[in-house]
Image 1 (tube, rainbow, N blue to C red):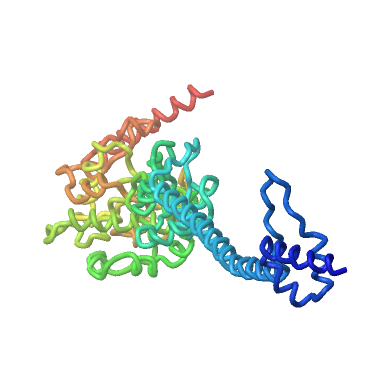
Image 2: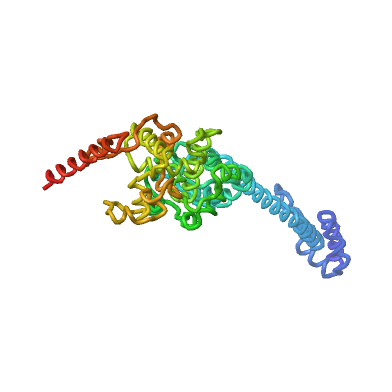
Length: 435
């Protein structure tokens, strides 16, 4: 017993030297701890290094606490990194979208609109937005087209109607400039002719037959005075002697060009202004005594000259005959005026009863001029009346059945009767040849 107790302290001392870290546990654990240390504390074998003593539970807990606090500190840093990465990605996307948007916006000016075989037609009320969407909508996003129109609003505010050529080599910006300036595609215009010798009823029918014309002239024919007052200046109306009850004789014969949906009223206005302008340029400031004293009288007589012959060379001679008769106080005795009095559309031939029937236009029953022109006189007929040929003739009659043969002129009734007989013989021969 004493020997065992003597050895025990030596073993404990040896153990204490080898593992000093366990002393505190030894003190707390009492004898039981001493027994565990005795049984487990053996000398290490020679030549083998002694292994490190296991860490205490307190140290392990401390290490776990440190690891936990370090993990908690790392989580906010990771979140911040993720947030920064997301912000960076979003910023990069925004930049890419912005650059793409800018490049597309810049490229629109130089975008070559594909070739179109038919003219590109803009109707009234077309806007730059509808045009840009139509021409480039299949190649660019709507938002880019919207921004383009907004940025160029000042330059594109007056797109004009018409037809435009799209040739496949003209950039969008240039096409839009053309539309703003109204550089429409040059087309062959349609035409309508106011033919010399036509009366106002024939002109009205001709205009109404033009399907491509805007039919807005009906009121011009129904209310001619209002139309003249609306169209002519105050000076023009005074020159003409005031607005007239009819447009007969007031429209200058010519071939008038027009495009689709042009106004028939506007065409009549051109014809009216053209006639008055021609008269103002050519009517003498001081008419010769004995000649016609007003521009309207010139138109009346010129319309009769126009209906009597289609040969330009004869017009001054026929005007000279009428002037000679007026000077002598003779009636004009012109069939053309009588026929107009029967009906503006009357084609003849005149009967003896119609020659005797008194109307304002019957120049066999009344002296002087008819109250209005009987047709639209040409410029050459007006010139003939303003500058009639000097002649002694007071009669004329057609040479033959063919108006292209002209007239025979005479200064005496006897000579005139011979000419009439020759004319009748020519007509009889023509009729026999047609059987």
